[in-house]
Every structure is written in structure tokens, then in C-alpha cells.
Image 1 (spheres, one colour):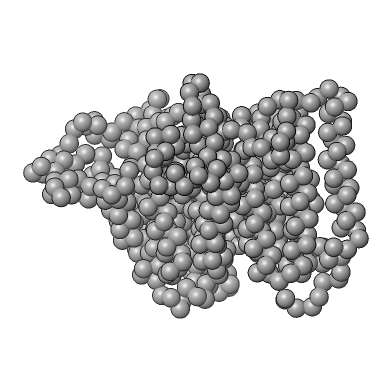
Image 2 (cartoon, rainbow over the protein chains, first blue to last red; image 1 turned 45 degrees about the horizontal axis):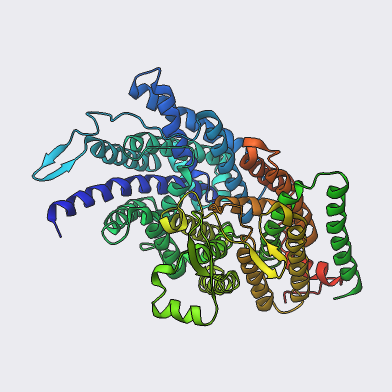
Length: 296
Length: 332
């Protein structure tokens, strides 16, 4: 085993792992306020990437990213208001099928707008070939951007949920929706807010990762499956655990290239998903008994 | 089977014949190709109908089984064994008469597995996989079940896509025809169109009758019947030589859509919707909006008409529907 390659794979794993963690956090935000798994979560990531690429033709990069995030947040709000807000006590199965339907519609719309081609934003700084070298390990500056922005996002979210009024209202809804209502919290608005936040975070992830992974109209589903794997691995609803789980999955996947062809990389992570679902659905860091009481 | 179910089956068979006659008299015989394919897809749909409707389990990776059966048969019947002729396994197969020589694309000789042997092997392997996966997966519920089945479908898709031997994104073409009896061949040849139409829909009728009968038995046996239907669909749906096999996992969702719109606990409803929608889709009426149409159907049904589709007493209702009796009290 070559030690330089080892670090190279490790860095790649951490990069992907961070993105998976961000997608997982998106799942968790919506799950916590609504008890729904939003199967269209990956589409937010795709939309963020695609919209920012489209806008970058006209405006500078930071403006394109900001606008893409805001637009995707608006799309998230529209989706919630159109398809979810007015349903009274929808069953889990019904919500699953509706969000799957939404993901198809978003994907097909993207296909019609942008075609089937692969797109990417330019590297935020430097180019594909530039690298920051530490000894014999070369790290692309974009990797630092991905990790940095993800870290800022997670910290920001923690502050939002811990310190701000809307954040605390959302947490109140998550722990007991009826009690939160009695305290005068508009639970429906909190659900919309959770979709907006989750869409924004997904879109941001799509923007920062697109220079490395490229993005196309159907990039959403694989990302959603991996994000979900990470969310389960960490324990559904637990965002900090999702970060750890994301790094674990990313690194595992990255090192799997050693023993299997790259084309099977996704197979590894989905096999992990199935394994976790079968063996320990409460997740690595979750409480088994608490999970037993939840409605999945 | 009670009387009115026989009647339903006979009516169904009669409409199958009527449709063929209609294409004959209106000179639209070329429609039969798509009609045949929608028959094979209908096999998947009735399997799924019972899984969702009867057992209340969602599966959005259902086309995975279809693909496993299809790709196994296609691979085995096209893989040239000439180079390993001397090997022990090939030798054994050759002695038992399970190998056939045929002309390959370039006019040379290719030695590959007999379609029948390949088909049986494909069914066996799909059953084994369904059994291994089905056990733990069906213990899950709700989101977890949906994700697990989606994951399963995606794994099959990714493996096919990453494997040169399965033709990667292009699929396997040049699959030989499938001789049922002398003169009775499952293939994409235009001269065989009428015959293939009847083979396809004959299988659907057989599948429906099998499911109608098995549905009376205990849940376990019914679930096994459902797996049986998947496997049959997987193994039979692909042998039509001209149709290129492409990884069709994405299509899983449309099967769910069809079952939803047909009425989840309604075998005949699903069958009719499956027939209509698959035919329209295969004829290209939805154009590039094909997937979008199915997505929209899915959302519309779930938003506006979920009653009757996702009821708690679904299980009893299906029993009642199939037995013609009033539902019994309590869960069976």
C-alpha cells in the first residue's frame, strides 16, 4: 500500500463524504419537522448545480451561486405549498409516492430545460490542475472549498437551530407538534421553512461539488440514496451524527476502488444502506429503543 | 375459482382476441409489436399489484427483478462458449444437449446455451435473489422499505451499467428467438407478430389465473406467488430478439404509477391501465414527456384520490375482491 495514494484516497473520501453529509442533513431537517423522507432531496442538489451553471453565463460566480440557492429555496417552498401543505394527516406511503412523483417531475423538467449533457461550474479558485501540495499529497483547492463551505453550513445550522427563534420553533415542532401549536407556533409555516432550508442546503451542496463531480439532470437520485444511507447510518434525524456517518461512507466508498472497479462504487454504498437497514435500522449512533417507537 | 372469476377471465381472453382481430381488420398489424410488449410489462404489473395491493408493501425497485431475469437469459444465450468448449462445465452442458450452435453477427459460428436452459437458469437465479432479498426487505416498512427497494433496483442498474459483458448502457442485442414448440417462436420477427402477441397475453392470462387462485391461500403462499410472477415476467419478457435490452430500472416507478391509477387492490384495473399506458408509451404518444407523464399521474392520484388506494383494510378488501365474499372481521 502506497502511503501517498492512501492520503489521496482519504482526501477524496472526505470530500464526497462531506457532500453526502450535507444531503443527509437536508433529509433530517424535513424529517424532523414532518416525519417525511423527502425522496426529491437529491433533486435540490441537482437544481442548485444546474441553475448556478446556467446563471454563471451572465453573472459572476458568487452571484450565480447565491441566486441559484435562493431560486432553489423558492422552488422548495413552491413544492411544499403545492403538494404537501394542504394534505391533512397524509400517510407515510402516500407521502413517499408523492415525493417520488415530485422528483420525477423536477428531473424531467430539468431534462427539458438543460438537456442530458453534463455541466459544471468552474473551479472556485485555480483550475483542475492546480493543487495545494503537502509533501507528496496533492489537494485540489476545490476540495478545501467543499469542506470549508460544508463546515460553515453545519455550524450555521447549529446556530440557527440553537439560537434563533425560527430555529427553536422548528425544533419545538419536531419534538411535539401539537404542543408547539398550543404555544402559538404556526406548524405549517415551519414545515414550509424546513423545505426552504433543506432546498437551500441541497442547492449549495450542488454548487460547490459540481466542479469536481459534474452534474446532470439525473444526478439527484444517486446523491439522494447516498444521503439517505448517511442519514440512516447516523440515525435518522440526528444531523451531527450525519456528518460523522457521511465521512465514514465517503472514505469507505473511496477505498472500495482498491478492491472493485470504479463503476461499482455506488454498489458499495447502496449495499451498506441495505446492510444497515437490515441489521441496525436505528443507525450507528442511534438508540435502538427510541427508533422502535418512531414511525418510519 | 368461483363462477364470476371464470367469466372475468373469459371476458379478458375475449378482449385479447378482439384487439388482435381489430388490428387485423383495420390494417394496423404493426401495433401488435407494442401490444405484445405491453403484455410482458403487464406481467410485472400484476405481480406488483399484489405486492402493493394485497400485502401493502411498496416496491420501487421492481424492475430489478425484470432486469435480472432478462439479462441472465440474454447473456447466457448470446455468450459464446466456443473458447471454453473443452472446459468441464461446457463439456457437461454439451453432453446434455444444452448447447446450441448458431450464426453470430459476423456470420461465424457461436456456441451458446440453449434458450430453454438459459430461461430456467434465469428463473432459478431470480428466485434465489428474490428470496435472499425478500426476507429481510419485507421486514422493513414505510420509508425504509421504499428506500431499500429503490436501493436494490439501483444496485442492479449500476452493476449492469458497469459491466461490459452486459453491454453497459447499450444492453444486449442479437438475443436468439425462443422456440416454445416447433413453429412457435418468441422473437421480434414481423412474421411472428400475431403468434407472439398471443404468447405474451396468454402468459398474462395464465399469470392472472395463477394469482387469482393463489390469493385465496395464506399470506405467505400469496407472497410467494407474487415472487413467482416477477420471476416469470423477468424470464419471459426479454426473449423477443429484436428488442434491445436496456437497463429499465428507472421504469420501476411507472409500474407503481400504473398500479396506483388502476386501483392498488384491483388486479383488473391495474391490468387495464397497464395495458393502455404501456401501449401509449411504447407507441411514443407521450413523446419526450414519457417519464413526466408517469410522474404527474403518480402525484395526481396520490393527491386527489388516495382513498381506495391506500386504505388500512386493503388486505381484507383484496380478499373480498378476489373471493367475492364480504370481508371477514379482523386480520387474517
